[in-house]
Length: 396
Image (spheres, helix red, strand yellow):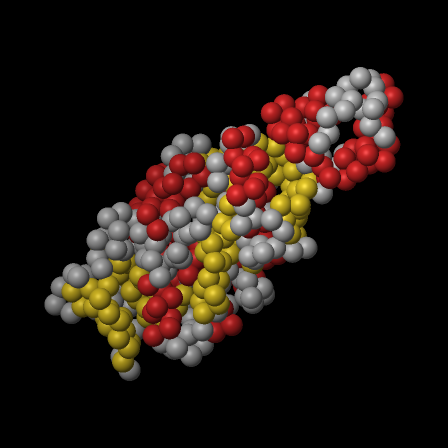
């Protein structure tokens, strides 16, 4: 920083994944860049992601795996900075990684390796980083932007908002980016927790909460979307990858449908088991495919106490239908405290898809989670952070 003026070519607010990548892209172009972070460290979400190993991208990234009121917006940035580009970054820094499943790439070691690599590239690009720096006000003039902070006043013709969303407030998440958008007259799409566990009604909690920790594979569907992955029973409701995925499409009062036997011809299997072992109890048959405790609870709840031989064919068909179409009505979600991302945000119809710049406020950019672009679980949101950060960094 030039201490006499505090002047830069670009100021970036927020040193998470998007902000760090934007700073590197701009700095590599010879721009004087200041990166401001109100936390005491950069990349706090990166550090905890993927169980501490950082699911840093997904090989199957495509625009159809992102949710937005303006679904075509993400095409440009994602096509110009791809998973292969970030993998090249990871390999250039010698970070060992592996594919876990479904295209998800994780560090072999700690997520801190990704943060350290980003910081090395920031240093090489001569990016100035201020930590524990709170922002008191932002003003715009013909010359650009003045950012009033706890560490001084900084000015630049370009201002990039990379302040993230409302998810995981214990990591320092705030609504600052949204408030700043409102200040400059930029429209917002209503926000909601995304990739978040469901809570259940009192009746369902009484029925299932003591099974907390039991997981099973299932197809979960809602709002014409479905995901086949694991479901986890918790002391408050339901979680696991399939639940987190479908939560981003769920709205209050919507039911979700759970297929406990995805792909199975369950009706036929029950009929064959009846003929082969008529003395088998329903809970025994189900317990061979599900957790024994979960199978027993389902049978107690549904009144399936008889042996298969004592159960009519019509009742077996009804049993199969109930197991493949278990309808659950969540009471809500666990909110931003447990949400991995924020749905909604800055309306991308007001941004350039190529540069992330506001169409109405020149020199003002929005990137990463603060925008109305939400990816699926599994590295997609990091890829959006990298891609949108690079798009803005190449433009400021």
